[in-house]
Amino acid sequence: MSDKNKLVVTQTKSPIGRQSDQKKTLIGLGLNKIGRSKVLHDTPSVRGMINKVKHLVEVN
Image (tube, rainbow, N blue to C red; front, side, top):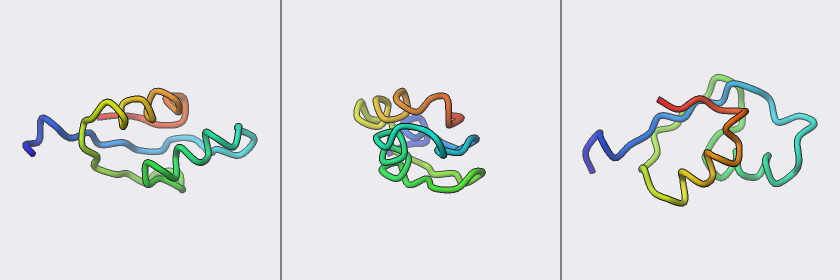
């Protein structure tokens, strides 16, 4: 896949005090600490996961 089909997702806030499904979604994205980043394929499922925790992450 080219760089157009990838997203860089960075965790910006803590999941402490959030619903457990949001914590599990962050883990599913490969994030578990503030400041950690992952390069993910741009798929509808990944977009849905990002949308669920959009208040905890930043997407570039």
